[in-house]
Image (cartoon, rainbow, N blue to C red; front, side):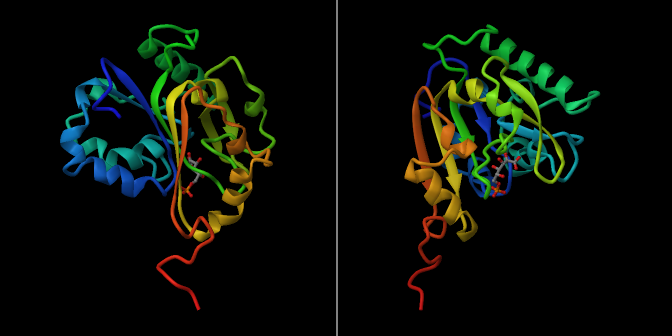
Length: 221
Ligand code: 6PG
């Protein structure tokens, strides 16, 4: 998809652990040669409000998995600025950076923010850092907001307007512990944050057998 695109494009990366293996593939052939590194700008769908070198940092995970090992121009990498006073301040700066790269601070329906948005699915149905019951779920103007995870950790998240402004949204879901929530979200009658996403473009679910409720690794007993 990126290779077929034209001009500058933006990708929003997911955090968490599931995408790590996918990210590592981007640093290896054949994907390494297929990605037009000079034209792709890398953002994150959400971030923990921790220093860039903190073990919980989503940006740190992606840099270690591929961004530090590919010819991506440093100016094309746009981590959430978590060195400021607060998650709200970080969200404001991050949205401003996204608008700078996009070239406008109002969304043009004909020109999505992102070519690709990668998302994960939490067991509670959250995606990015849009958690059930979060005030950020109601944000329809600003592109980024402060959030708090259920275990009380400060986060910054892109909001629905930003996440939905995408030519392609891809969820990556793996493992048996996601089977229940995935079934609910795919059933169409869930109001989980992940189920509410209405992308402008395509929506694709990449799931493994275990997350589909199958038996991981072949026939069960
Ligand atoms: C994060 C992610 C989050 C993640 C889900 C699934 O910052 O943690 O953005 O939304 O995608 O929690 O996480 P796992 O892939 O680790 O199960």
